[in-house]
Image 1 (spheres, one colour):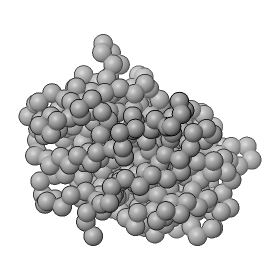
Image 2: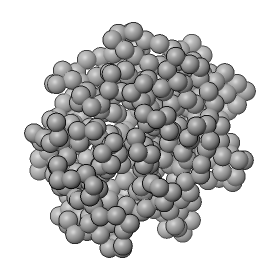
Image 3: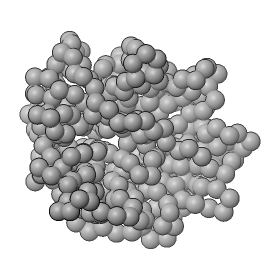
Length: 359
């Protein structure tokens, strides 16, 4: 099954257009002058960001590393030149990273540990603040979502078909992802409440598939659903009800990638008709905002936002290039001075604390 929608990476022009809210832009730089590509996976509530970088090595072979960007700068780990790259997928409030290399792992304070009891070909996608990791593992005849905690592995099952994969987990341990219902070739979004049974979240009317990528502490779920035709839209599930978040003007497809406890959703909106484009969005209070048009980014010297069409769950990538935390901070990568540079957007009501410097 094709578990990730992949497109060619591109950058987006930043037009100085009016925005609905003012933002503080913090330039977080890059690990060193050898860095030529930065990818981001997640930002935790302390403002620490997990992701990956490509750097020019001492030979002609590029070097791939995962990273955490915190208050002391960049910490690189899992460096590889050949073989499976180290891919950071998520980071919790304690700064523990999960991801996949030659096997699923956690990284904590400089120590990288393989998840015991999980098959090496599994993928770890998400970790909550209690250290519970969720993802997908091979089983006889298919692939099942799993949850791992302190060496214990739980097979989370499916909606009846042979496939499921977990993409998000909240503090309570509620898990969301996608699974094939019995007899279907298309996945549906699922919610597995802590201590409960896996439930099919359904699709928008007339849609063939759906995916759930993130869940907040209140149980609100962000993801995507097919709509009649060949398009898909970002969606929000609240109390079992699905809402179509729409797309940005000039685009036909969108995906809700992340959600915080305030119910703010970030994601990407993709246009195929005419000029191809991928643009980042923030949806909150019923309004979708094009983040590529924020004047604050242009004022800070960023000429474009770097995005990728790769979604949550791709084995060899961190995701499309946007993440949000519960403080409302949004992490991204932009072009500044002709180089890829990590940045964070902080809403005005978050005060003057810089990313990675909170307690």
